Amino acid sequence: MNGAESLVSTLVACGVEVCFTNPGTSEMHFVAALDRVEGMRAILGLFEGAVTGMADGYGRMKEKPASTLLHLGPGLANGLANLHNARRASTPIVNIVGEHATYHAQYDAPLTSDITGFARPVSAWVHTSMSPKTIAADGARAVQAARSAPGQIATLILPADTAWLEADRASGPLPFAEPAPVADAAIDEAAKLLRNGKKTALLMRGTALKENGLEAAGRIRAQTGARLFCDTFAPRLARGAGRVAVERIPYFAEQIVEFLKDIEQLILVGAKPPVSFFAYPGKPSWCVPEGCRILCLSHPHEDGLGALEALAETIHAPAAERASLARPDLPQPGRLNPYTAGEIIAHYLPENAIISDEAATAGLGATMYTGTSAPHDHLSLTGGSIGQGVPLATGAAVACPDRKVICLQGDGGGMYTLQALWTQAREKLDVTTVIFANKSYAILKIELARVGAENPGPKALSLFDLHNPELNWISLAAGMGVEASRATTAEEFADQFASAMKGRGPRLIEAVI
Ligand SMILES: Cc1ncc(C[n+]2csc(CCOP(=O)(O)OP(=O)(O)O)c2C)c(N)n1
Ligand SMILES: [Mg+2]
Image (cartoon, rainbow, N blue to C red; front, top):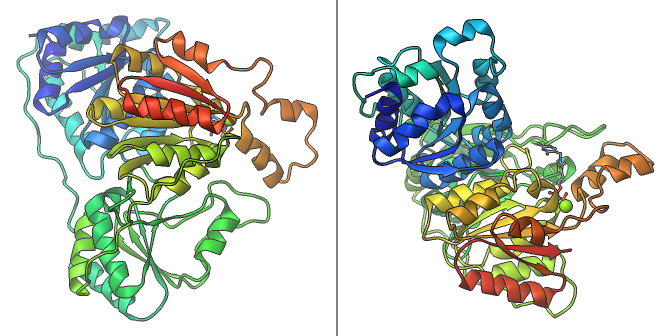
C-alpha cells in the first residue's frame, strides 16, 4: 500500500467514515485511495467554506469527526471561517490538507504557502507527515486529538510524496481523552451555593445541553429554584416538548445586563461567563453583575453532564419539569414576517428535526415558538462568522439521514456558502432551507446605529442593501438542482413549508419578509 492508502485505512479504522472534500492535484493519491480502501464516504463540496461547514454539522450531530480533504494552503484558507465556527463549537474534525512533495518545496512553486500558519489558529493539533512510514501513526494521532474532549480540530498536512510512496501498514485507533470527571469538591461547592438562599443560575454548554444534561439541570431547578441559562449561540441544544426548557441569554450587551441583574451566583457548566458579542461605546463588555460570585462547576473538557447528575443527587433533587407540547395555531392569512413564519415553522415542525439556525434578525419568531413544538435539536452560529447555516444543515443531514433538517437562513449569510445546496441535491439530503429574504443585511443597519456611527449617508446604507439587483433564490437553487418556491404571504409559506415537511429531499423556500 502507499501512504495515502495507509492513511485512509487508518482513518476508517479509527471511526472516520466520511470525507467532505474539494481536492486538487496534490491530493490525487488520497482521492484514488478512497476507491481502494473500503469504508469512507466521499462527499464533494464546491467551495471549501461549504466543505468545512459540512464537517462541522456532521461532527456536531454524530459526535465524532468527519475528515475534510483540502487543497494546500488556499483550499484550507477558503475553509477557515467555518473552521473558526467549528472550533467555537468544539466540533471534532480531522482536516487532511494536501501539500507539495517534500522535495518540491525548495522551488517555491505557485501553490506553495505556509499551510501550518493557516492551520494553527483554528487547530488544536497540527502536524506535517514527512514520511509514508509514519503517516498511519500520524493519522491515528490526528483522530485521537480530534476526539479528545470536548472535541477539537486536528489538521494533518500530507505532502504528495508521503501519499504516493510505499507505506508499511495502517494503524488502529488510539485511546482519546474522554470528558474528565469533575472533582467532588466542585460538586459540593456548587451544592453549598445552591442551598445558601441566594439567587443562582446555571449557565450550560456542551453535553449539559443534551437531553440528559437538561434533565439533571431541571431537577436542580425543581429543588432549588435556580435558573437555567444557555449561551445565545450554543453549538447544540435539545429543545421542544418533553425537554427541560432553558432561558437563552439575549444578544445585545444591555439586554444581557438587564437579564442577569438579579443573579448573585453564577454556576458555569462547560460555559464561559457571558460577555457582549461586540464592544459598543459606553456599554459594558463584561455582563456579569458586580459582586456576583462565579463558580466553575465544569470546564469544557470535563464531564458537565456527570457533574449535573451528581449535583442533583447530592441535593436530593426531585423530578424535573419538562416543556409540554403547545404547537402554535397557524396565523391568519396575510403578511409574512419573522413571527408568522415562526408560528408556521413551529406548527409543522416534525418530531426529532434538526434546525440549523443562521436566520439572524429573522430568527426570533422561530425561536419563540419552537420551544414548545415537537422535540428537536437546535444548532446555532457559534463563531459569528456568517455562511455557516446551509453547509451546517448539509453535514447534519449526512450524519442523521433519518431526521428532517431545517435550515433557517438569512439571505445575506446564505450567499456565502450556497454551494452546499448543490451537495444537498447530489447526495439527496433531506434538508428544507428557508431563506429569509429581507433583501438586506438588516442586522448591520441596527449595528450602525448602536456603535454610534450617526446619520449614515447613502454610501453607507447601500452597503447593507441587497436590492439592485434582487437575488432570485428560485433560480439560484434551481441552478444547483434544488427544487424551490417563493412565499410572499403567510398562507403561501404555510402551504410550501407543510409540503416540504411531508416530502423528502432538498427543498428551498424563499420567504419574502
Ligand atoms: C464572515 C463574516 N463576514 C461579515 C460579517 C458581518 N455580518 C454580520 S451579519 C451580516 C449580514 C447578515 O445578513 P442576513 O444573513 O441577510 O441577516 P439579516 O441581518 O438580514 O437578518 C454581515 C455581513 C460576519 N458576521 N461574518
Ligand atoms: Mg437579510
